[in-house]
Length: 248
Image 1 (cartoon, rainbow, N blue to C red):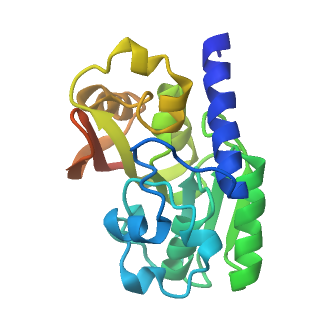
Image 2: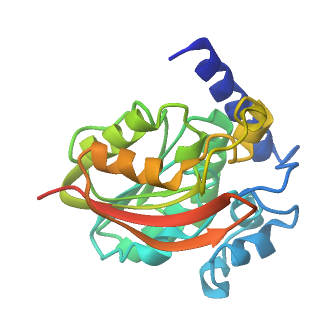
Image 3: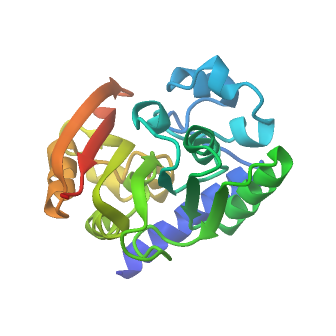
């Protein structure tokens, strides 16, 4: 990883550590949404029923750009990975769907987020979910562990998306699938945005052109790559929901 990439990751990590501490949140219009967090969760696709019963420590720091669990078609007994799990909202919704015979593991690189997610799990007495500290470019997980991988507006934050998709492919079982909500562009962003660490943390500067993003998923070995939905956030930046499969 280059010095530039390390600087970007350090800034993103610091930003989301502050979000976890509730001393700061996104200060630009981005996938992280407006200051009122629970209404924003509804805007990006979480239903009242899904949000019901979740504490403010879960709903209050939603920083995604979609609701991947709503499209993941999770079955009871499935083993699920939440890539960049944050405060845990998607992991908790997935845990409910897979039931006591299933398992959800969330991985996040920010110590404060992992700590918060664990506290949320204890508070809600959710026993089939686990949160681990780790980077999505180098997952602390064994090969072929998961039936399904979900991720919500996180991969755009990584300077090395090829490595992220390679790791996703590695930890999925043959025939497993990914369901990703993420930010992409319709064209190239100006260099002044690309080079701005604040815009990286805001889920904008790291967004790739949609065609490039999808090609990277295919380059990692995935097949049946399909965009299920797309929502425009700003002039050339969109949120897409992507499904892809690891060959059986």
